[in-house]
Length: 160
Figure 1: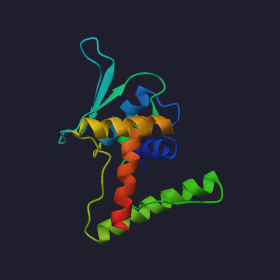
Figure 2: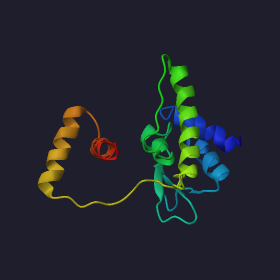
Figure 3: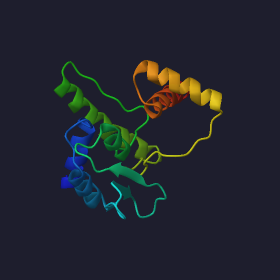
Figure 4: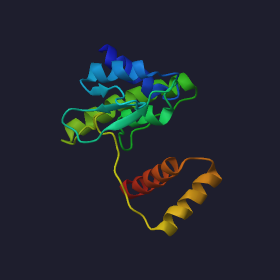
């Protein structure tokens, strides 16, 4: 297991950890991604894979917010684990990830890479946008976090 793989595993286990932009740089470097520093007086680093159009901009504040760490990590639909303790759950999740990737390869399916940054721009009617903002505020989360959870739930129902 490379140092980048170990760092990626630690970030998956604890996206809310005290991660710094230097950790993001090490991860990108180890995975062959580009991690560009702010330019022209800006404050955001840019992480991208050379062949990908998606660019994740990351504010260089310390610590890096968990939402940015999660966006760097691949999503494996249906992959989950559990356990009686936090340690047991983390071990089970690591095993589940390895098994998920193995099964996907055996079935001839693509295994998402950390390069899939999961961003797009979506237009919505103002009335829908306002309703979503109200619900997100009521639940104490950002609009992005709320919409992501609603989409994940809907996709989970359709694939079950």
